[in-house]
Amino acid sequence: IRQVRELIKNLGGHHTILLSTHILPEVEMTCSRVIIIHKGRIEACDTPDNLLAKIRQAGGVVLEAKVGKDNGAEELMKISGVRDVVTDGEDDWKRFSLRVESGIDVREEVFRLAADRQWAVRELTQRRATLEDVFVELTHPDLV
Figure 1 (cartoon, one colour):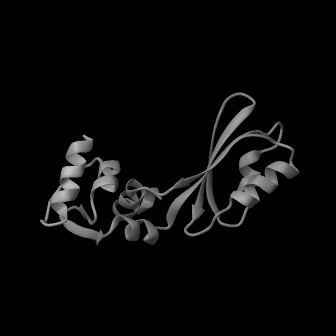
Figure 2 (figure 1 turned 60 degrees about the horizontal axis):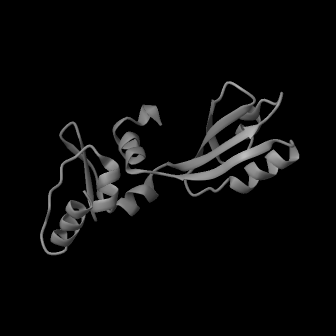
Figure 3 (figure 1 turned 90 degrees about the horizontal axis):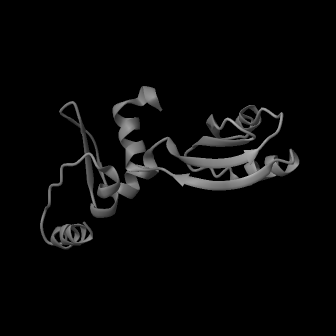
C-alpha cells in the first residue's frame, strides 16, 4: 500500500492522476487536490488543507474523566465554542466527545473545568477534522 501511495505521489508531480475512492483517509495521505462530487455536482475542489480549514466542524476534543455525580456534558456545553457533546460510558468513567466551532481550541477551558470540579482525567486530546468531516458537511449538512 505504501509503495502504491508513493507511486501515485511521484506520478502526480508530473501527471494528472484521477483517483476515485471512498477511502478518505487514503485521499488525505496521497492527494494534493480533492474534488468532492455529490449527485453529479462538484461540491468542492481544493487542497485537503484548504478544505479542512473551510468547514464549520473543525474537529473537537475528547475528554475521558470520572465526573462523579456531576452532569459532565451539561458542564462542558457551557464552555464558549463548544457546539455539541456526545457522552459514552456506563461506569464511573465517561468519555465526552466535544464538537467545537472552527478555529477554537477549548482544551485549556476543559482542563480548568475538570480541575475545578475535581474530575479525575484519564485523557484530554484534540481531534482534528478529517476529509470525512468535510464530505459530510458538504453532502449532508443536516448531520452536522
